[in-house]
Length: 412
Image 1: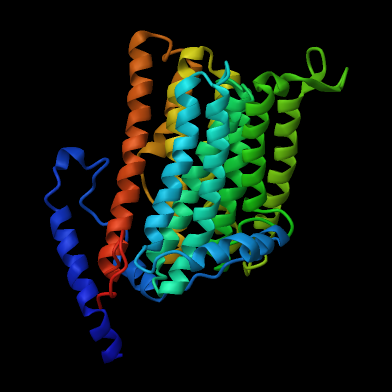
Image 2 (image 1 turned 180 degrees about the horizontal axis):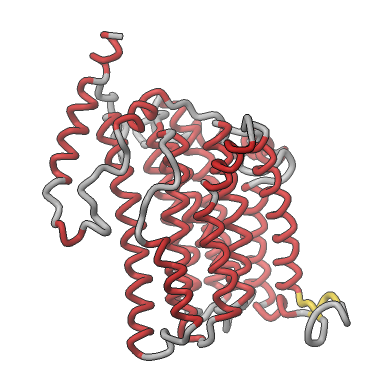
C-alpha cells in the first residue's frame, strides 16, 4: 500500500498544482471555464488503474491489420507519439467535413469534384491513423488512459464531421435528411460508449460490420460523387404509393438513410441488450437507462427541429449547437467509462437545449434578436465543448505525467 502511495505521490502533486492554477480563472467565465476540476479524486484513482478492453473486430479489420496497418506501424519512427497520430487523424477528419461545408454552407448545391475526391482520401487517411495509433502505443510502451480518451473522444467528433460530409455529397440540405443522418450516426456510437461504462468493454460495432466498414462507405460516397456528380443521389429508386406521403417515391439518398436507420437500430439494440445483461434488478436497470437521457434529449430535439421549427435561417446555428453538444456528451461518456464517476454530470448547455427548442416552437427565434440569441447559444455550445475536452485532457495528462505530443519516460 505504501509503495502504491509513493508511486502516485508525484501525480497528486501535479494535480494539486493544476487545480491551483484553475482557481485563478475569472468567476465571470465560470459557466464555461469552471474552477472546479472536471475529474474528482476518486475518478483520478480509477484512471490510475484503468485497463482498456477492446471488443471484437471484423474480418475486414483483420485483413487490413495484416496487409496494411501492421506493416505501416512497424515503419513508424519510435519517437512519434501515438497521441500525435490520433490528433493528426482527427484534424484530417475534421478538415474533410469543413472543406465541403465551406463550399456548401446550406448542405446542398454540390461541392467541386476535386473537393469530394480529397474528402474521400482524407477519410481513408483518418482510418489509417485511427488504427496505427494504438499499434504505435503498444510498440513504444506508451499506452495510457489519456490515449484512450483522445482516441475515442476524437472518434465521436470525427463521426459528426463524416456525417456532415456525406450529407453535403448527397445534397441533403439543412432539414430532415441531415438531422436524421446525424441522429442515426450518433445514437449507436454513443450507446456503445454507454455500454462500455457498464460492461468495461469498448465495442466499435458487430463482429461482421463495424467502424472500419462505415468509414469505407463514407469514402465510397465521396468517390461516387466525385466521379458522377451529386445529382446521382437524387435518383428515384423505390416507389411506395399509398405508404409514404406525397408521390411515395424514395430517392437514393433517402434509401441510404433508411439503411443506416436499420443498422443503427440493430447496433443500439445490442448495446441495450448487453447493458441490461449486467444489471441485477429493475432499479439498477432504471438507473442505467437514466444515464442515457442526454443522448435521447439531443437526438429528440435534433430530429424534431426541422419538422416543427419554421425558418431556414435557424438551420445552421441549430446544427452547430447540436454537433457541439454531441461532442460534449460523447467526450463525457468516454471519460466516465475510465473514471467510473456518476453520469450524467451537471452542465449548462444541454439543459438549455429544450428551452431553445421551445423558443423556436413559439416563434421567438424568428426575429433578428432571436436569430442572434440562437447563434450566441451555438457559440456557447462550441466553447463549452472545447473547454471541457481541453480541461479533461489536461487533468489526465498532468496526473499521469504523460506528454500529449511526444514520447518521454512516464513521470511517477
